[in-house]
Amino acid sequence: MNKMQKQEIKGDERNTEEERNNKKERDEGKEENPAPLKALNHVSRLCRDVKKSIEFYTKVLGFVLMERPEVLDFEGAWLFNYGIGIHLVQSKEEERLPSHTKELEPNDNHICFQCEEVEEMERKLKEMNVKYMKRSLKTEDGTSMDQIFFNDPDRFMIEICNCEDFKLVPADSLGKLKLPMDRHIPPIQTNQRHHHASN
Image (spheres, rainbow, N blue to C red):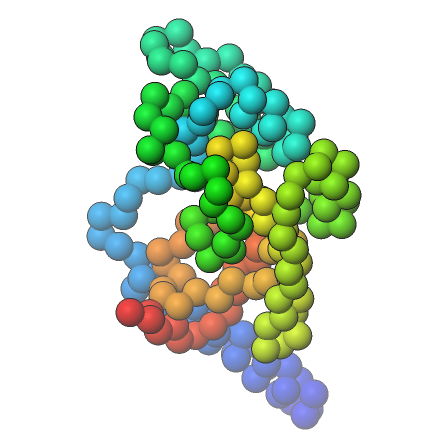
């Protein structure tokens, strides 16, 4: 057996050992009674004016108005696109909604949409006279991300970002992750041998 063949065998052994370690970690991380969940179905939003909110989410964010079950006997609307639903519910109590004077604060509650072209989304917001805040972040490894924050008509905050540039590194066991069969964006790092939960 020559030197090159020995190196190939050692490389195969290392790959096999790494696969065994990853499989062992996944198996050890599996919960005995995991929640039987599949995916996020929808986000619900209270609103002052359902029609005004429909116009915003369809024209600004490209959602599509869907038929709503007649069994729901309260005023509202169902919107859908990008694999997620937005359910609008007419509010009867003003105090349950954000104040009209609430300013944009990126660290506040919000929903975020991943975007292919942040600049194009920014141009659209300008055309529609939607007030927004833009910022850029850079991680230790030099990866950059652009973010745009703005409010819907009821001042619930929305973020647009190119989040797929950030790789997610599990801090807990890989065995607890349930990912789509085709792909997941942002990408999930699955080749680490040891993970420590941060509590």
